[in-house]
Amino acid sequence: PVSSDEDLDGDDWSLLANSSELHRATPPVADGIAGCIGDTPLIRIRSLSEATGCDILAKAEFLNPGGSPKDRVALNVIRTAEAKGLLVPHRGDTIYEGTSGSTGISIATLARALGYRAHICMSDDQSLEKSQLLSEMGAVVERVPVAPIVDPSHFVNLAKRRALEHERVHNDGSKGFFSDQFETPANAEAHRRSTGPEILRQVAAFSGTRHAHHHLQHQHQHQTLQSPLAAFVCGAGTAGTLTGVARYLKEDAGLRKGIRIIAADPQGSGLANLVRNGVLYAATEKEGTRRRSQVDSIVEGIGMNRMTATLDAGLHLIDDAVSVTDTQACLMARWLVEHDGIFAGSSTAVNCTAAVAIALTLPPGSRVVTVLCDTGLRHLSKFYKKVGELSAKDEANDTTGTVQPDQH
Ligand code: PMP
Image 1: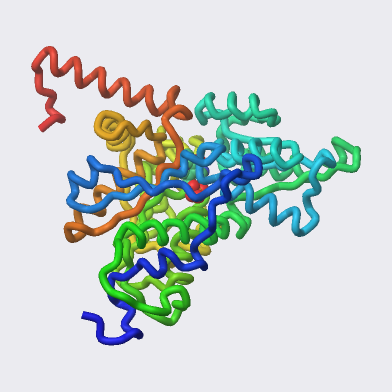
Image 2 (image 1 turned 30 degrees about the vertical axis):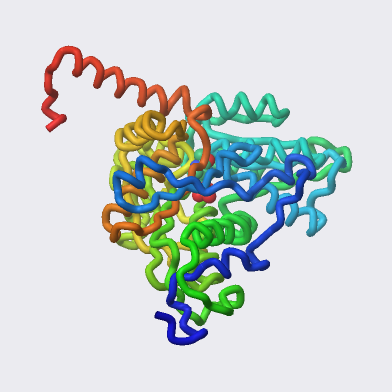
């Protein structure tokens, strides 16, 4: 029972869900591709919810026009640069970025739509699907051998250098702009302003009305509110999503009670160790690992082995981490196709695996939110090759009836 209007510990999130602060009316007609970004559905993944007894709710970011949450980041980065006069449309300005692919695709998409050129640097161990798509979108693509971040040829350093060289190379009055997703505040800010509020509004509406309260749209940092979601689980590549959503939920919306921010971490990434032990060190780090791109995994887009401004801004808000092996991610990807018709990208499979692990530690009925980052179409040649190999191995075992030692 609710004792007073000041008691904000109840379960009534309907006011918040409907508050004008969080509600952005969707116009009947979108103004170009940029007008289609965000407001993605929150999908209850039925099979995982039934298996865990919790509601596993996934933000369908693959439905953004550029196919990933990076559309939000690219749009915010471009608008911020325009406001500062660093980018001017239709002047031949070029946006330079170092990326595992998704951010590049979003930049290339918006560059075409908003009057810019795109120049994307990525390491050559990322799936070919992404660089092919970038070329089709008209971006200049430079695939470079994998190198440590201290090496000037690392894809991020190269993108920065190309931006600095722009004026000398082009000499036509146009400017180069390094969008710098690992360091710019505009990255996490995009998620703090859009992804986070959308998630809370959607979970609040899903949670429904139990008690009536006022003031929910005016709640502030100093109030402690029971959260309608028990956990937000998400991988980190730049940590923009994790930092931005965590800052919104914990700082802006004031959710402190009963919410946990969980990093979903692929094998070979140091983030889990950083969160748990305060040391940025990959558990599987070994001779030769430094030659790998970001992390020693077939998963693309997530995993971190170095500190960045974007991660630093949100690290104190991360409560725990779940490490996920490549094999676990592949099995989850296969499960999602078979049970839910969801063709997940590799980071999505890691997110869902970690969400299940967390759900199993929570009371039944808890709500766990995660992110569907992109689809399997961008991961056919690498991640789904391994998924296929695992399936073939299982089928072979089925037909011969032999039991492998590692199946016990
Ligand atoms: N999934 C995919 C497919 C990505 O490309 C990225 C970004 N590198 C992420 C997840 C992680 O997002 P963030 O950079 O916000 O941590």
